[in-house]
Image (cartoon, rainbow, N blue to C red; front, top):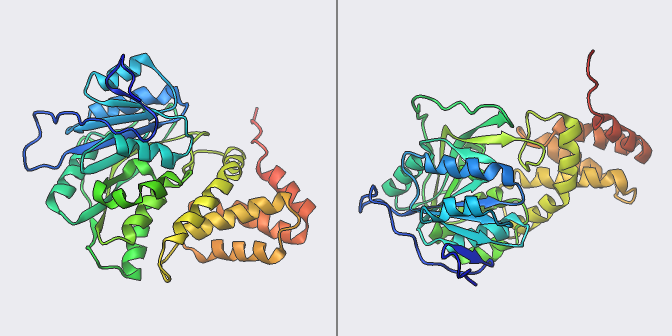
Length: 358
């Protein structure tokens, strides 16, 4: 139900809304473009995320902020510019993402997590890619991490490396490995999709708890739409303890407990994603999530068979590149094979904060 005091605010997850008028700078040949910005509890980051969208050289035609809280100042900043503020009580990223998709009408949608930032040419590159190729369904641009509190370095000039395009209807293992190596299944703020790709699967998207980026990638991979990876860093990804992405600036004492906490949800998502993958589809990334969850769970549950722990360790060893902490997980798996008690001691050792040197 709409809030009568603010026509830009939407209550609930399934409410449709009218479209915001396109800005004057957009030519008739360009496809309307929406940005769906998701924010859960973290009020401290959202203002920066909104500002980064506004600073884009080609701002979006629609901006939808999906949050679980009210903030009158930020809400006015969004709605005064013609955007929409969607209130949700669901804490799954899939539900929040689908609510934002429902609140927008543009045929092309880019996503942004509240703790990330768009660099100025992020949307220009997306617009050009989708305007140039009517078969394109999925785009992933490059990103650069930055430590929370550190400045974001914006390049004076965008150097565009060679893009990788997987044509419509063509799928080979070599193509999969090449686009997978560009991190195309990670970081939702780097993803742009065509609405037509998502439209048949909105209910399925709503069931995804955390793994929206890999869900979008694999949905595109098994579709008839083309995929493209543009390696230029166009998104700044904030590394902090509350992030669900890989934190290269974090000590393992912070990263491991966080991953242990969310690994059951990631594993459930992996099951949902694998359910729609045809036999023979390369499910790299999903295997490592399941392996991580098995190894973490085995620390507390002596009933998990040793064979399951061995299989999980082998799955991690088989992949050339993984985003999970392979060395730490392998150490936990090895000690778990020796003794349940020893694996608990290893986990406490790995999660002990570093001591300060006086």
